[in-house]
Amino acid sequence: MTPTIAPVRTRPRLGWWLDAALVVAFVALTVALIRGHLLTLDQRVADWAFAHQPAPLYWAARVFNYLGQGGQVLMPVALILTGVLAYRTRSWRAALPFAAAFVLTYITIGPLKIWADRAAPRFDGPEKAVMFNPYAEGAKAMSYPSGHMGNALVWYGVIALLLAALLGRELSRREWVTVRVLPVAILFVTTVYTGFHWLTDSIAGVLLGLVLVRLIDRFIPRFLPASRA
Image 1 (cartoon, rainbow, N blue to C red):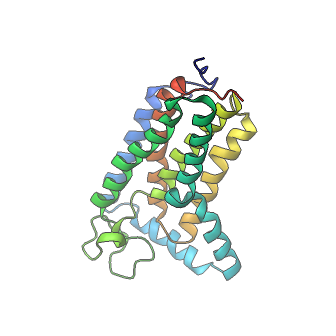
Image 2: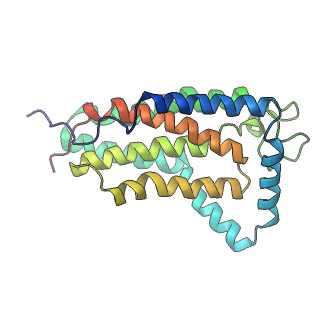
Image 3: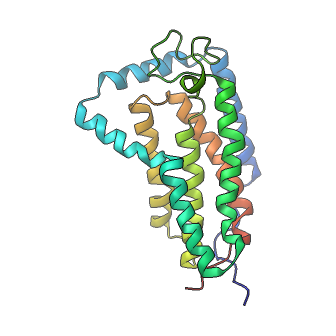
């Protein structure tokens, strides 16, 4: 028997105009940083964070920051849920959310990081807030946009889709907030507070992540099989 389609919303709220607005905002933010705007804001936020890091609070933030570890946390969780859904439905379509998230993040976030060549707040060289930093290279110059934020928005969105398919229903508002909003909000704060990313890095990651996850939300759910269990 062919598995039924999961009763999850097949289109994101609002229309394509919001996706376009998010892209425009991301481009505008990137251009502003290239031209040297907002760098003082970034530095002031980072300086404040570094000056207010008592050990208990700092290490708590470091632990919560693992909510955004794509390769160590989010992808394994999504892969496990994919395997459970595939086992229950006997359908290859269970792998579509994982595949879409992997491809979209791989072809966008990584290349943009390499292109922007921006160091993180913890970089100890000169001009650390600028884009195309001439004093940083390789792993020390991959701060923009924040992969923590972009990956988190995408992978938590995928996890929510897979959970809805396994449950055979849409997530409730409380479940939706718990899975898709709360971890991302916590991650935004901890990523900036710990100095892993500049404030504008994280904002850019949110903008980019929203575009990517809305693409997944728009096209993938209609093909996703629902669990028979």
